[in-house]
Length: 151
Length: 384
Image (cartoon, rainbow over all chains, first blue to last red; front, top):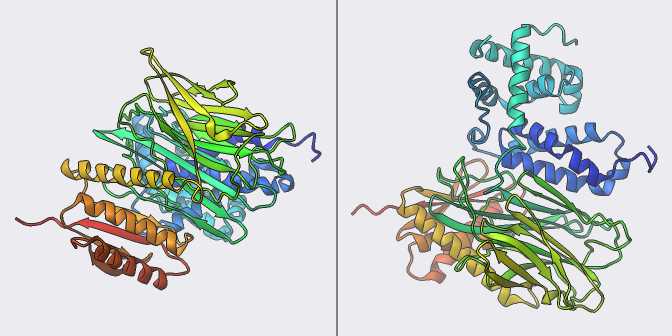
């Protein structure tokens, strides 16, 4: 990518911040964490920005990994706070509560598959997990969701 | 592996996608009041100076307090210091992921109004590194400041942080910031730059950043937040800058900007610290009196230095103790195992601090590599 073709990091921040915060929020269920994660990801990338060839893929991976790390460090934490996620649409809010309560590994697969439209093999690669495990997680998540969501 | 062998009905598939879209859309369209300003100064190419400052301010349910936090990351030593972290929320402790929470009442869906101005200030003398970067998001409003296009550094290895003091438009309000800088320069004169970011408050109609050479730069006011940004000409003292406030009622006032530098302005740092302590204490007292909390917690990230962790824990414990006639501090490791308990009800402050100090150091020794220390200052309710 030539310099002329490169998206300025600041412009990238303007363009992608909201989308990335949304992704981080879906992954974590926590707005404050989502905003922190995105800020840190952007701060971290600056020194190596020249080496980033696919900004969208880079940020998606970085945000996902940061959320995973953060959740790993959140020992003894209960489920993420539910405030701030009300859409005012009853069936959507009910379904979101079900998604939120999924184990993190399952929730991440669901979010990346149904929100980011990622193929399972790509999700496995992004999460650094065995593809069969990712598939199994999605199966389990869907079993849970089928039993509780209005279908 | 293919995705097609995942059994899902079209209805469930569509509903899931809609649910996630609708929920995601709630992020980015909210009231910014009570939110947190995040200021991220990205590392300079030398990698020596990365600063993150969080400025939090909130007032809710009768609780008025504010505190700002800052972490200074030193990439040379891979150490990150987090001077303070504390949290008191309506529902109890709510530590955040990075070990930083805000000494303010969390919104928790309630309406939060901040009527006093709070601000954080970055002094940035022109230097040799031309591509510093400041990312600021105030609620949903995103400011990208300081991408240098003219060869001047925005932030260099010698940037400074300051605080706003003086006559704020709302009497008695506290501009509480916990900020530090690893400053090494003593002369703060232009050329350079001053960036002020903060809450404007509902009463504020306009804010100007005035330099001692008579020039003024109006601040951007968006959604209750303001960003004032001024280039400082050569030889103009940066620390003589002022913030001029105009309120809707027609009154005007001026705040001065002080450099926060441990070496040259220790008194200011002490005042800051005192304000933080006072705010925390007030918060705790009011929360306790209202029966909103039974405990408050503080988390110290394993990456912080021992001295910073201990200092933070001690200070918090002291604040908590000041708000409670009887309290114990319990320190637990990341596995939840209780390490020890210190009695904070000792009448002798030095004895009390010695106890907490020993406790924290013991905890740090035990969890030196991966320590999230949880200090639970549990109110010890006297049964009378």
